[in-house]
Length: 211
View 1 (spheres, one colour):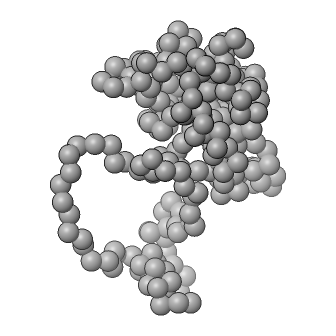
View 2 (tube, helix red, strand yellow):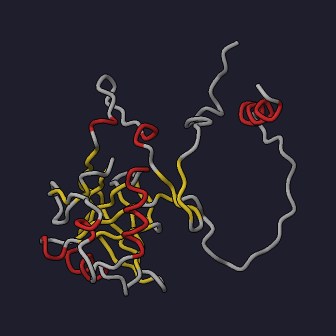
């Protein structure tokens, strides 16, 4: 093990942070909460209005009931579709979908059929009247509870009503879904990234170590 690698390992395993505090400067207020999932949101109640668009302002807000949100600019093509139908699907993306994820974020559904252009398959959802992306490792069917105007974006606060998962990433013995095997990608300040090496899991900091 190299000295640099050993220091990194010690920093993770040793408990308290061992690195020295840096010198900080103040910036103007802005969105610096990164990384974020880069998702493809699909919408439309009939094939003629099916559309895909990329969203990074997305997240979890509640466990029970399971709820999430996406924030969308009102001028985007999909905004009135979701506002009218009040249903959409959040499709997690992986390395295989990275090109399509970016392309669907810079092209408008007013000008093209994004499913067709990117060779993606719209599949019928179980609960909502919006398609999910069959190539996505995980697709989350959502029903809008509230629309909250915030400024540049409106937040669609939604309840999760069904989830699709690619069985290739499900352990047949435990039923657990392997996010690592799915090779999900993240978005950070204008760039897409692979997820890195795992350095711990929930509760590892207080787990009793074997003597």
